[in-house]
Image (cartoon, rainbow, N blue to C red; front, side, top):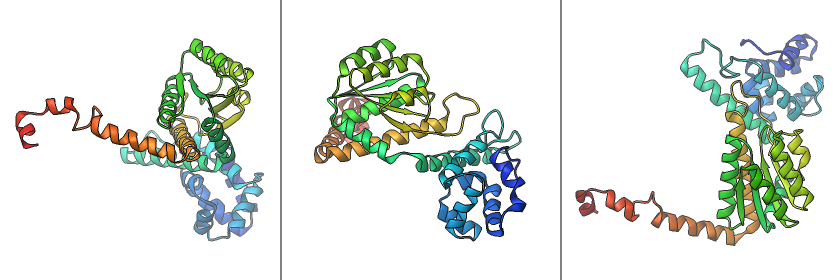
Length: 304
């Protein structure tokens, strides 16, 4: 058995003997491979333990959790406290193969937990606000958040939505004072505590704009928003905003833009088709582009 972090996993072991036999089988499955358990469905856990799905729910309640989702979030947080200073799942003596496997499995487990945590109703409200907006401005602070905000802006632009992305604090304030009631401000920050970003979102909201926050729940930014797209992942051992937070934000904006496109209907689909066709014919990375043709050798051009 692997060395286990404290708190929930430790409680599972300490209270194991007092549990009914069926719940002990559930605990055995979880303790044997906590990362896989975080990413598993209730049905999968029940099959692995040889118990019914209600037994999984009762086991979670035995440890003070109202739902399986709450239990799994706590389990994911416990896993985050283990491992080495390089990665929470990696031990210093792990082989390269073990390191690769653990990091991939860790990310997969975090994304599975995220699926259970995402508020679909909030995503739907955000998509409706964006689809009906006169303008959508994306705010960010920090390297990772700025990449996500720029990517989101590009996705919305392709759907035909008037959108911008700002990482400069002054430009964010100028944007905030011009959005108005038909505008939407989307603030991206996993940490959710940057004063300049909070100031911009507060001002945008005071002007009547709808503020959407892509951040962790219960951050100051989340409290400032009209709609919260909460993304919780285990803390990274090295970076303040780690790879799993980065992936979680990418998944969130992917879901959001698909929902927006669905609301916009056929006109959005046709616009995307036109983009694809034009880029295939004229894109700089296309073999039919004049710049690419000029870079070929004479033999290659004659062969064509």
